[in-house]
Image 1 (cartoon, rainbow, N blue to C red):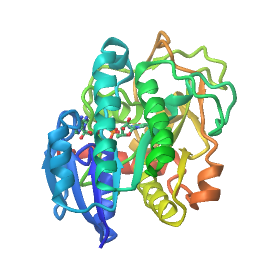
Image 2: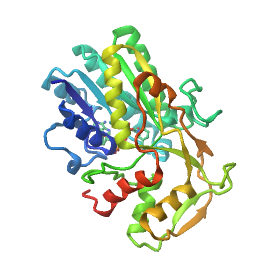
Image 3: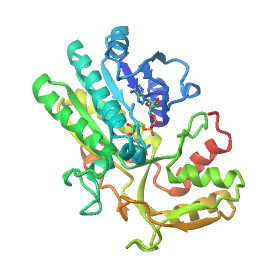
Image 4: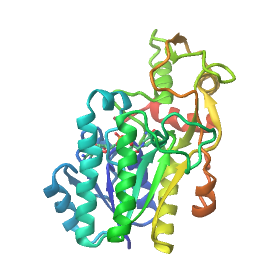
Length: 327
Ligand SMILES: NC(=O)c1ccc[n+]([C@@H]2O[C@H](COP(=O)([O-])OP(=O)(O)OC[C@H]3O[C@@H](n4cnc5c(N)ncnc54)[C@H](O)[C@@H]3O)[C@@H](O)[C@H]2O)c1
């Protein structure tokens, strides 16, 4: 039975990964500081080590537990605005913390690593859809932390033979169709949970649309929504590819289809069967008009194809969670 360490396994995407790994019969250990993760998201059957990547003793402690075959690394700070205000926190956690992990892996000869990167590495896109060979020019510290880790991974492959796949997620969304785990960030900056939370709470607060004068068909920003279960699937395929052909690679993960903020709102209204109040607010700094992935490389080299491609399906799974969230 392969032993997988999941860093950040108590978070949104990490917990879905843990559930999938357990279902597939892997031996799973979660490493998490619970800074933004949830104890309630932990899955029965996974071992748990509480600690922070920032403390090398914690990292060594978890790696001493068993001879891991691979590490899936989801643990990071993820708020773009916070990264602008507190870059030290982001470089410390996302870059220095990851370096601690990679150094400890090299010291123990653990040679497979799957990294949660982000579309934020591209900054403001020059071309849509975005391919992996688009220049990496992030526009905020969060994006730079992802770019820097990708650079470290390239160098660690050449120098130490640490094989890795970086998965550049676009907008992660949706929830486990069984409804036991889902998205819960504080503060929540993602569109779908904010729409559903606002609609379900019957709050008089309208959903804010940040700008309706973008050069897009309906004037609102277009994003590529990729389901969290499809992301988990891509990780398993990345692991297969590392076994078959070690190296250092990066893949976009998106469903290749852009949806505007207004389209997401309209789909949510159809799924809820109710009108959702909205208000136009001013644009947010650094929001590109379009962010849509070309995921052809992942299809070609990993054999990955997203299963959740319709907004309604994605929203149904998210809604199931938001109707009855456990954390
Ligand atoms: N959510 C998205 O749309 C999205 C998009 C692109 C990339 N990503 C990346 O995917 C990964 C997971 O995102 P998420 O939405 O699940 O975030 P999340 O905040 O829900 O989960 C992150 C987890 O990592 C843990 N963690 C953070 N710093 C840690 C540290 N120093 N030591 C140990 N544990 C630590 C947190 O407690 C939490 O459980 C992140 O790396 C993020 O940058 C997410």
